[in-house]
Length: 151
Image 1 (tube, rainbow, N blue to C red):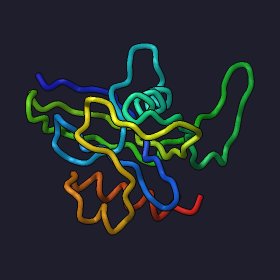
Image 2: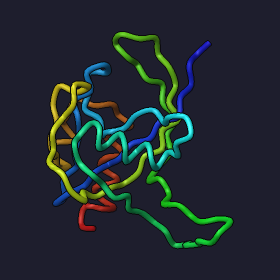
Image 3: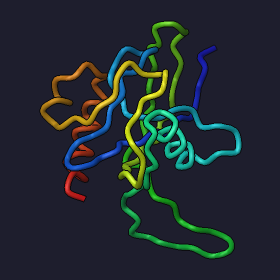
Image 4: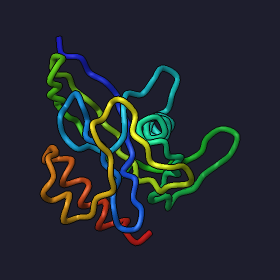
């Protein structure tokens, strides 16, 4: 049986560039993100994983045309996209990610990678077009830069 996981991540954009990590297990450049833990909302996981993997505190941004907040219900920032991915780990059996991808901006902190990555950096569109990453990651990253690079 194929393992299925809910994951969340952040496309962190600053000065027209996106923060990417060279993921050790997958061997490709990816935005920060990871598995949603028990009793955690996906948006919380996206912020937590970004802090753990990059050292940055981030704020999610996005389209919040409908803002509702009262005792019984409130709206959340929508993910930029939601993706179903077959994840080709080098050292584990393939499994499926239901991935909620948010846009974020830096609130505070200094970039510093943890032991899950072989590199970290800020990349513009030209660099992302050529980097070693998954096709869907490249397409989503470029679309996010088009939509949010100036915000």
